[in-house]
Length: 132
Image (cartoon, rainbow, N blue to C red):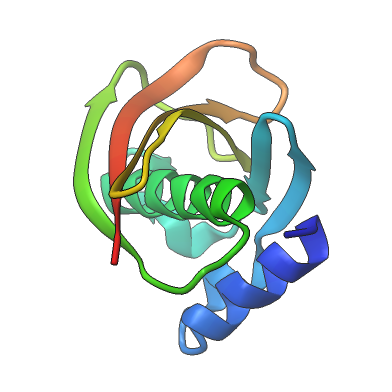
């Protein structure tokens, strides 16, 4: 799937989520997405919320799985483990997803999340998608 097709699938998959409509695919090797910052993503203390980071990790791995499997049909989150490593800045969130194993039944990968303009990883996720 092309970056444009992946963006359209993300928007269509989450029609009521304003964040999904703003996600942009920057590249597919590795799968790189950006979620533009908005104040609704903040938690008390002025940092991005954990649910925002988890949603972006899941979406990035779904995009990577769609690209590798060339479909969005029959792909479902099976497992998501995330480690929060440092406080993210109140800025755009960059996700880099890599598929480690594109199996017939499971697609396994990792996602690194960074704040725009900072090379340090703010969160690392291990994500598995089941193929129906």
